[in-house]
Amino acid sequence: MQGKSQCSVRIRYSCCCCGASFLRLRDLVVPGQVCRVNQSRLVQGGSLLLTLTIPICLFCPHAYGRPHTTQLYQHVPETRWPIVYSPRYNITFMGLEKLHPFDAGKWGKVISFLKVVLCCRYHHRNPPCHLSPQLPCAEEGAEAPSDPDRRNHNGGGFHHCSSDRGGGFCAYADITLAIKFLFERVEGISRATIVDLDAHQGNGHERDFMGDQRVYIMDVYNRHIYPGDRFAKQAIRRKVELEWGTEDDEYLDKVERNLKRALQEHPPDVMVYNAGTDILEGDRLGGLSISPQGIVKRDELVFRVARRCQVPILMVTSGGYQKRTARIIADSILNLYDLGLIGPESASISAQNSDTPMLL
Image (cartoon, rainbow, N blue to C red; front, side, top):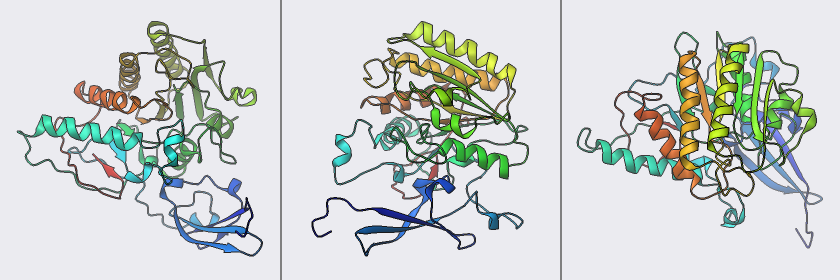
């Protein structure tokens, strides 16, 4: 860069369905984990030009009015666990990611914990352990109401990012993208509920769905911490503001009572559950005092209420700023499985390394 300490970055998005280019980030909700950098070069004036190809452009006018094919929405076979994951979710940057408060590799750790436990459980029943690669993505996390389902997306939950801006460690609006995809492309999905139980207010999706009566938002968060977005709070239909150090009994009681009321007020076709673990005691960014057992119990009661109401649910794992959160997420998933709230009666899994998203 010849002594320059900074350079400007210009990003051109190229739609793979029509070849059109988009120059402004705010024109798109970009599914960052499925984008590939096709070209990266320095241009005159010290600017960095990135050209990204987007596998599906929900906002491209050329994509409509023609037969649509996608692998973003697939049926989950009965022999697979309904967990979506790709090694690409884990972020590395020459080791500097270790200095960031967010554990950018926690999703891979969750899968590693699950593989160890499940391979031990089923070693005698299903030798050898086996996992077949699939090609799902987060947007496929719910099925039509005639076939209620429970899915876990081991990643995502970037609830501070809206369709025109990032924020709070969140680079793209995956919750917004998932719901818009379902509304536009999946028959029978016209009403959605977002249940945001991360310790922070989910101001990104709240801004995106401001005034949209199809989307009901329930948000339970520490009232004293980031982002404190007063404008976005107008979109919350059921707001539960917590105090510093809220503990298990009070927290679980408020979540259960308000969730039941939320589903009564707005019976949805799909629920997106943002299951942040930054509510864990000792999390300096969350400021709450929920035990590991309390987090497991929270996830269980959300899935139980959703099943009782016959609502398909997509769970994303969102925030959590302690190294032990990966194990707690894995423990919660195993608890949901053991209780029959997710997954088939028997499942298979392998420790193979794959660079494509998978269904367990």
